[in-house]
Length: 344
Image (spheres, helix red, strand yellow):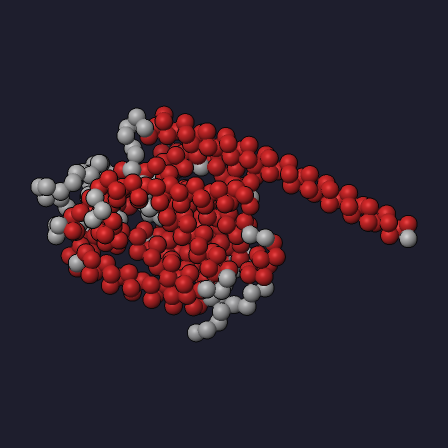
C-alpha cells in the first residue's frame, strides 16, 4: 500500500510539474509573439508605409480583372487601362505576373467597384493571416511566437499588401486538415485551385502521393481541369498564350532564391531553386514514414523551391506548423495509423 501511494504521489507531482512547465512555455510563447507583432508593426511603418506599399497587389489583381471585363489584353495595357505600380520595371515587366485564373476569379469582385473590391480583398487576406497565426498561437504558443519574430518582416508585408498569399496560407492549413480527416479528393481539389493561382502550391500533392493517398491526385486532376476550363472561358485562349511569355521574365526578375544567394555569397547558382524543388520532393518521399515531418518538408519545398521567391512568400512557412497544432491523439490516428488510400 505504501509503495502504491508513493507511486501515486510521484505521478501527481510529475503532472503538477508538467502543468507548470506548459504554463511557463505558453506565457513565454505569448511574450515572444508580442515582440514579433511589434517588429512587424515597426517594419510596416519604417519600410512599407513611406513608399505607399499598401494594397498594391490587390490593385494589380483589380486592374487585371478590369481589363478582362473591358475586353482588353491581360498582359498588356492600352490607353484607358488602370496603371499598375512597378509595371515596366525589372521586377514587373508585365502588368500581371500571375496566371490568368487570378484575374478571372477577380472579375465578379471588380464589378463591386474599386473601393469596395479592394476593401473586401485586403480584409479577407489580412484576416486570413491573422486568424491562421492566431489559431496556431493558441495551440503552439512557443513555436508560433518564435516564427512570428523570425517572420515579422513577411508578416508586415503580406498582411497589408493585399497579396493572395494570405488566402494560400489558409489553403495550406485546410489541405492538411482535409487530408487528416480522410477527404483526400477534396484536398487535391483545393491544391489545384491554389496551383491555378500561384503554380508552386502544386508540390503539396507530392505529400499525398508519398502517403499512398491516390484519391488526392484524382481530386487534383479534376480540380485542375475545372480551373483550366474556367480560366479559358473567363480570359480566353490568347491570355494563356501570352502568359507563357511572362514566365521567363518573371522567374528572372522577381528576386528568386538564386538572387538572394548571389547577394549573400557572391556565388551565382541560377538553378538553385529548381535543385531545392527536386531535393525537397525526394526528401518528402524519404520521410513518408513520418507524415508530420514530411508535411513540414513539403511546405519548405513549396516556399524555397519556387522560381519566383520573395520575402513575403515566407509567411507561408506558418503552414509547416499545422500538423503539430492538433491534439496528439488526432495526430496519431490520422497520420501514423491511418490506412493509406490505395485505390488505383
